[in-house]
Amino acid sequence: MKVITGNSNRPLAEEICAYLNLPLTKASVRRFSDMEIFVEIQENVRGEDVFVIQSTSYPANDNLMELLVTLDALRRSSARRTTAVIPYYGYARQDRKSSPRTPISAKLVANLITTAGADRVLTVDLHAGQIQGFFDIPTDNLFAAPVLIKDLRERYDSKELVMVSPDVGGVLRARAIATRLNTDLAIIDKRREHVGVSEVMNIIGDVSGRRCIIVDDIVDSGGTLVNAAEALIKAGATAVDAYVTHGVLSGGAVARVTASPMSRLVITDSIKATEAVRVAHNIHQLTIAPLIAEAMRRISQEQSVSSLFD
Image (cartoon, rainbow, N blue to C red; front, side, top):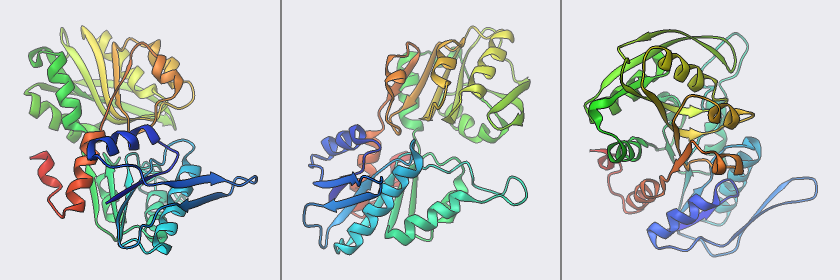
């Protein structure tokens, strides 16, 4: 197998290669003066099983285009099979028509990746499970839950914890972790008046005197998490932490989180951390490199990927 990476998250790609004991395949991913993207594979990949590691995080359009051009270069280089490894799948929140005359961009991106030459897709914690069905090629959606649960078990006594879903849509995710840790579950009933602006209406469940762990897949502006943390503290929670797979943390999100009542926000390295994230006192990053690397190894060896989560 061969592993290639774009520019979106090279540190994660290097950790994955270290786990697999493989070198990164030499490739040049650069831009012309007008910002056109040019990719040159500098090793022979004919007949190889190639994995392209590229998160479509900020700048989303640039990183997506890097992925598409790399896939096309590999197809024209006669790679036997090409797997797009997308730790963070951008545009995933546009998975349905939320109002009249709007796109389903998650489906459009799936079409682009398939047309560009991907034979398979490997991703982590899709915002909506049905996005797997947007692809007409095999798609593996890994779960970061084992990584998060391991950290929770090492840090806390599960008896003092309550898992909290920040909205109704995330109940299945929070319940799965609550079941594994044998803890209680609470749900935030929120109302979203505008994009990026939410208001907590009710808390379903008893959180008084307990440490609350908010579980979600994406933190972007941080507004939902901060509002939920404030509401939980008002409801009598002794402390509030958050465990989120993808730390988008755009705009003033980092400042918002550091000024919030949250003791810790734990994210994974599916998205490369900015300098602001690295220096934030209450934001911590866990690596999912071993999880992705093991899935890649099993795909290459035609073994079961789902058994990773048994």
